[in-house]
Length: 474
Ligand SMILES: Nc1ncnc2c1ncn2[C@@H]1O[C@H](COP(=O)(O)OP(=O)(O)OP(=O)(O)O)[C@@H](O)[C@H]1O
Image (cartoon, rainbow, N blue to C red; front, side, top):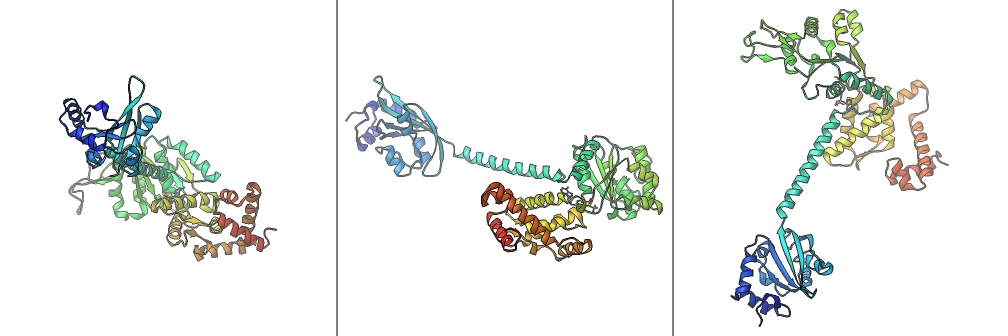
């Protein structure tokens, strides 16, 4: 029996094991060296027969070296001890190869297999260095997952500050708002309840030079008249009976450097209106119970759904304050006057809630069209809340016309009766059938035509069949 490392070929498994266990000096040197390496070492002859594995590889694979020695790489692959072989690739390409490999115990390794070629250009051995990268891969997975979460939160946040729209009317308003955002002029936002006055105020703040400072809002209608002054300006300790010992910082002070949004400004009591006017003129506030004034740098945005002009006439709102807060007026029209936004907002709110709960609820075109023609007295807020309700109760993950509230259907049928126009269902059917015909003509097949209309192919087929039966499609 030869006991030299270079003469391992043609030896039986038992012979190799004997050699490895022997005390041969040269071999002992190699073994000791390899066994002290942190990386695994796996060595085969030119026929892929395993000659040697070091201690680190035993640990990494959770198998003793006896388990490998004498086996060819094909056997090792057959036994699923590894999922891919670097040795085979190194033999095939006659050059060093690095690949990722999975072991039977699910560990992941980065391996480099190097062919050892002698003076006669014959391949003698393949030595593979094996590095355990399971931890790194797990960490990488975790980092990727974290990044995905951060990305999701970021896009949610970005979207949160986005003022969704599709209509030309809203586009013009947003352009103006972006322009005015850069200046400190006071802005009065008017519009019916739920049109997005608060959302607009936030949009202006986010697009202003104060975006990294605070955006503070106060709904003037939600605070009793007796508490408004202390809310706005704060008070010194012991300013009045019942005052907190620490005193109170008012929202003007809190918003210093940033933006203060006073919602429902029409509800501000007259006495407070004159105080607010003084603050806007002097840019100083005085806390309740204090002798001194504090300089304040705050951009003021106000909003109301009341008609301030008639309130002025009725003596309920100060005219001078009105001019002071109304330097730039922004009016947000009700949803029914910018119907295209209904489509964009419906899609966005549905997308948001689907993303939140990881579900895929869709809305069919009949329900979509009904919502489009509804008057939305509660505007965007009503639309947002309805989408949430419809989402919760959707059957088969689809919102249909039957799911819509009765009040909505009544509103639409009253409208067509009072305006003496064609019934909505008929209008919808006409429009839908025309779109179905056009989409099919354009694409020539159901799948692509349905995709164009953003509906499921089965819905496309069902609807087309129905319209053929009803005589809308010839
Ligand atoms: N264009 C829009 N894009 C996305 N969300 C919007 C938009 N407009 C309004 N919203 C959302 O609709 C809801 C109602 O909007 P908001 O509170 O801003 O209305 P408002 O006019 O200030 O109401 P109110 O008159 O009752 O104070 C909020 O959840 C807001 O985020």
